[in-house]
Image 1 (cartoon, rainbow, N blue to C red):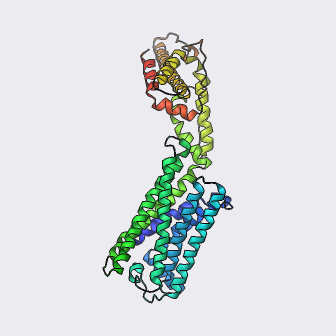
Image 2 (spheres, rainbow, N blue to C red):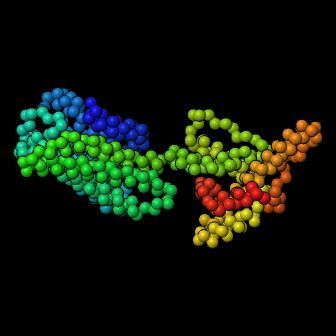
Image 3 (cartoon, one colour):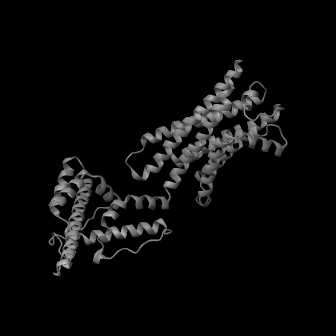
Length: 412
């Protein structure tokens, strides 16, 4: 039962991912990339699920052919390997004409292997049903031996190509480019899945070689290889899905919404006139939440316009340039520093006003006007032009220059 779960769980996860992405895949069905992704997910999920012993028994009984599951699983694994190569070809940025030729060649090669697997199984004799050791049990049987070699070779070529291409591509991508992070994550997962797959193949080839040389290392094929195959399918499926999900509009909105949190948390109390934003419901979509958060931030920046100290900005700009930052980066950091100092001064002024109001109530004296009515720098109604806001939020939260400006505003 444990062995079956090891195979069923990754297969179910990949199938669930396919169902979740089904609308996107259906809308883009005319694109070769989408068709390859569908083939990859369907082939990987079915190959893992059909490799479990209970499923092998059910398929063999349903078809009435002993060991019918063997060519079925081998063909699915071969299609899975070919689809991996095709998807990587489309991702690689190679000219379209080259990709089309390479795709046709890959489909033809792996399609030929699938036909060879089915033909060799039909020509061979496999009278004894094998649930776990089909490879090693029939390692010396004519035609079946060649069938096993065909699928292992095709799978080895596909996994090796996938891992090598992902590694080369990953090294060319900039680590700091935010739009490329889903792609980098996907490639890293693909490399990890490729490593597990190559380990699975090494176990299979070693067990087969041992049989051919008269030794018995069947445990490598029956015990070690299945968990490796399950892990490989899970990581490879996730690796291909992450860039698709990460490149979607809802995911981009969610990432932007999350990165804006530092600014939103600092500015949400400074809405003009003390107005609070309209609360959102728990079912509000992320796009609406993003617009709401951006509006709160913009209102807060406008409310703090007369609290911005140009001296803080100039000092932060000079410090950033002294660290070797570009003009654009220095301007971004200096805007964030000026905003952080304004937030701190305004918050302390509001607290002082509240304390004064409470003391006035206790003594019966009139209280001072609201602190927001007396901006600290009335001659400098600065605006912040730094865009995108996500970069401003990152500097606001992480820059040591901004932290220094905030601390100095506290002491002043």
